[in-house]
Length: 425
Image 1 (cartoon, rainbow, N blue to C red):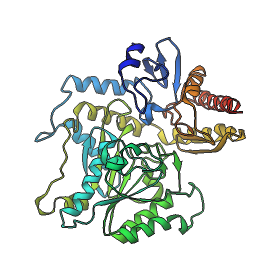
Image 2 (cartoon, rainbow, N blue to C red):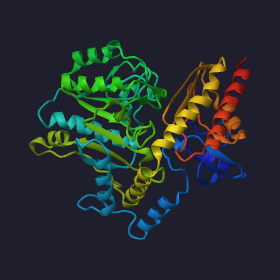
Image 3 (cartoon, rainbow, N blue to C red):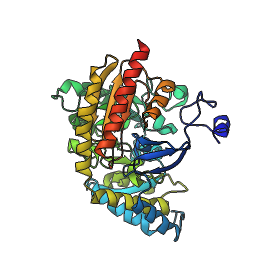
Image 4 (cartoon, rainbow, N blue to C red):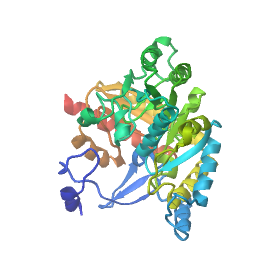
């Protein structure tokens, strides 16, 4: 199977013939992945940040099995169903009260596409034909589909191959203020300047609140988000917050925008929505936004085949219920404190530029880019799954990880980074 995979199956951001075989996972339970050789490794990535409850969760298994006996899918055009209605009720009840409408899709990237469509249609439906740009941020990442790529960092992002054919948007400097840093208005000056110059052509600002994810795992001050919201109101543009990665408790708040005490006009969520069981995402918006879209008899022009898939919605209902019923705040706080204490040791190493943590996120930034050919097998030898990128070694463990399991992860990171430093000498 591995030989066939290597010859024929494409993997994310990888050549068609990878230099090394993929690890073959045969099963998963709690925070462990079991490989085909019987070795069990702790997953520090929550399968790209989605598996917050761990693997093979009885409550989620039961929800999926129960829904399968009824129907796994039905089109959402002209029809509706209980799992979608219940999920919408829950999501609207746990997000800001200004968010009154919800559009279900099947991935985080598509939730961003829908958000961009909402923003553009909001203005064009009202005759504002010049508002055709989005103000985004360097170091930002919002997905791999074309609209989402157009608002990712165009210089240091992953999509430079498409630069010539993407929609041209406007980019402000990335937030440079750390999470607890004393606020200085200079941090927001570039955003203010860009909006003052371009507000007549800007439909919306899009931002990952408090944590820029795949663009660099950068953690920044909530006041930055608050000031962006105030500037959006001042210059009459919409605010889209992309919480695909940060939603459902990852930063220590249920949603990261809560750190700033504001609410967006449009909110994108995904990843942990189903606890990593199914692909499902959603775009929430205010009544103001949907009424603007529907001015002059228009409707939002989007409709995925698997929109509000009943099986995914049923699992999402069980996942959100499980999260809200758990001591998730205490768990995430404990993870943050342990990450601060244990990853801090990495700063003793000359190759390490900075260690930063927030909620259940731990980041070790190096002075040099990582070598996956060295680090991947080294981490597996230590009994953990960690997937670095660029110059970042980071973890986003499941919330159910034990203290001992997390220590295993952080110890492995120190050992592998130290070995990498020795290799570079």
